Image (cartoon, rainbow, N blue to C red; front, side):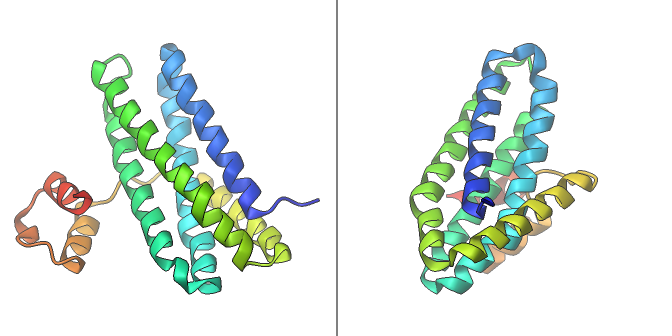
Length: 184
C-alpha cells in the first residue's frame, strides 16, 4: 500500500530526531551532519508549506491558524539552523544552539503530530492523502535538487512580516531586532 503524506511527514520527523542524536554523539561528523540536516529540514519545510499546508487549509478552513503557526515554527527553526551552520562544530555555542533547535523542532513535531496531522487525516480523504504524499515527496526532491538558498528569513522578509503585524519602528531595525520583535 502507498504511503500517505502523513506517513511521510512522520518518517521525516523521526529522521531529523536521529540526526539530532548523531549531532550530539558524533562531534567528528558534525560538518556533514549539519549539511544533511539543513538540506532535509529545508526541503521538508518548503514542501509542507507549499504543498501540504494549503491543502489542509482548503479542506478545513478552521485549521488556517494552526497552519500559519506551523509555518512560523518552521521559520524559527530555520533561524536556529542558520546560527548552527555559523557556529563552529567544536565551539561551545554549537551545543547551545543545537539544544535550542532540538527544543524548537521537538515542540513543532509534537504540535504537528497531535494537531495538524490528525486534522488532516479527518479532513482529507485517504486516496487524496496518498496523492498528496507523492506531491510532497516530489516537492522535497525538487528542493533537494536545486542549489541551496540561504537558510532563514532575509531581512526583507522579516521587514515585510513586521509591517504586516504593525511592529513600530521596524524600518530602522536590524535583522536580529526584527527577528526578535516577530518572535516575541
